[in-house]
Length: 297
Image 1 (cartoon, one colour):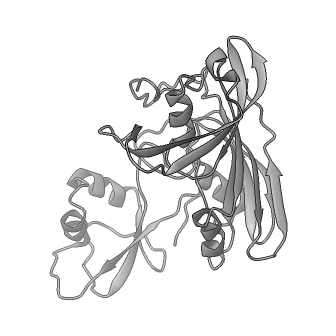
Image 2 (tube, rainbow, N blue to C red; image 1 turned 120 degrees about the vertical axis):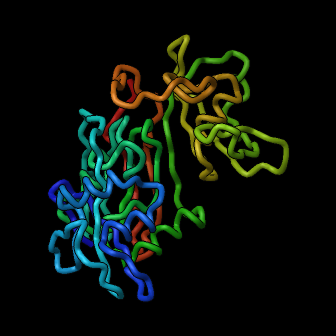
Image 3 (cartoon, one colour; image 1 turned 180 degrees about the horizontal axis):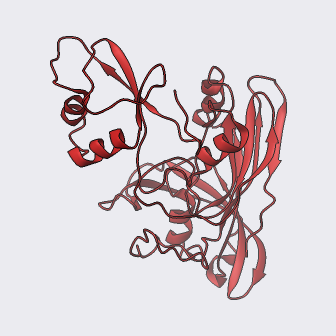
């Protein structure tokens, strides 16, 4: 793995024997048909393709079988996220970050440098950092990273086995109808909808459950404590929306608003916060407990 000055990690590709290409450019075009020729030409011109010795290669260089090459993504333009993450805890096993709203955890789509993972790699110099769970780009709060790749699976298994307690806070409308039902555990079956950005409730055996508690009332709003028993995509957002109290400034539920690519509106962060996380460390045996320093508006 190679890492550039912005903390972005390279990808690796193998050049198999038995294939005949006039040059490296032809190989990349043939094997990555979803990326057009001009993009690969630009990557070579900008020195974003290397051999394993770290030497930048040219598009016209010869195809040499049974070797590996490293290459970086290239973004002509990327949204700037003007909020800073914090490191709450770090040892030789894990790093606990406090993520601001709007910042993606890992590279995807338009985001490469402006991600929590790449910012932390650049800040700490630890290139093996890997998130052991995710939260939405719109959500702020705690994200835990594995420091040592040999230990990564043990930490990821905590979430697979539901051996982690996560607590969120959210600001959503106050509901007289619900007040006498709280605290309550809301259950439903969540599946992907026709639109890939949204989840929807469907008939069937529940696969998602959330404990919902009322913390504070400031009509017409209220603050809720949410403890998910499962980890479905958009679970908390879906459940509060289904109860008629969608989270303040939610751009996906109940109505999917047009996606903002570059001119982001930072004045309306989703009022959802990954507040607390507790688990028994599978490597050290310690009881771990962390609380975000951030608060909802």
